[in-house]
Image (tube, rainbow, N blue to C red):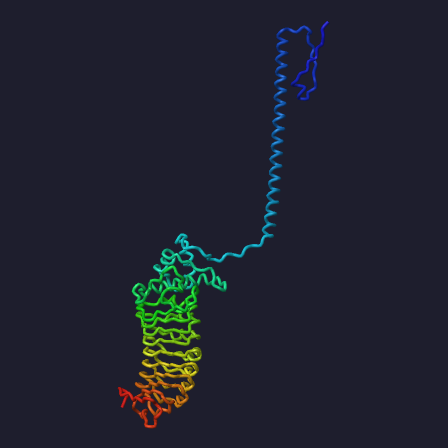
Length: 429
């Protein structure tokens, strides 16, 4: 009787297909047994592969989950860090901004320093910057300015560069090596206010306030940048060979100037209009030049602090303005040797502090106004070489008078003068 043997077919069962039974003879051939053994080995191998595949997918899934968790954690941490940093930034007060041009040593790259200095000077200096002066500032000198003055003004840093540039430019422009003074300290690394020929009474270190280079052999022209030094109170360049120099419009920037002496420096131009803006002036010496133009009609209104006005030996035309009588502090008025015309204004009698009046060698007409009798302090009067006539009004005692001896000016009633000199000239008797 045959026996029924049921075999499990792995391929079919694993795929979820219903099992099928087969009926075989109990007596198996050797080939059949070999086949069954091979089938068992195959089933084991297939099961191993399937198990390994499942483990791989599980591993991949775990890795992906770990990566996602790490990314989420990182984003969260970054957000938290930024929030903390923002909070910290709000908690810590911000520092004051640094000045646009911090104090640095000129040992830095010259091109960097040159750019910084140029950016300071170019908005102020008219025209191109002088290359020789710039080379000195950024390559030769090791000087560096203070960050601020005693009052903490940061603009003083920029002003020191302007001042240094102006002084060095003056030296190069007027043949500094040939000056008739000991100029060894010029262009040194000392503070600018300590350079030789600057007034020793200066407060130094500090801005240059007094510049005195009278009769030292300056040759050439005064650089216009010199008149940008607003801290100056005294400027004396008299009796130098400043050929063809014009008073620049920038002179009106010297609002603090009280003393200006540019006499005998060959100045030219029509800049009395600009000078009258220097309302703090007390002493103005411009004689011995070639200044042209007229005395502004408002000159006396604006220059009320003047004690000395010396415009003699120029080429000034026009009339003496009525406003001249408003300069009540005036002690010395020198208008001689010009081309002035018209009459002498009666307002001149208001100058009660006047000690010297020089009007000679002009083209004035008429007579001396009667108001000159009010000049009680007058010591010197010169009116010769004009077209003046008529009698001379009584003058204070001890007045030294020089006038033309025609048209009755030298009348016999004039008895108060120490010296009455009637000048015999082309205008004389």
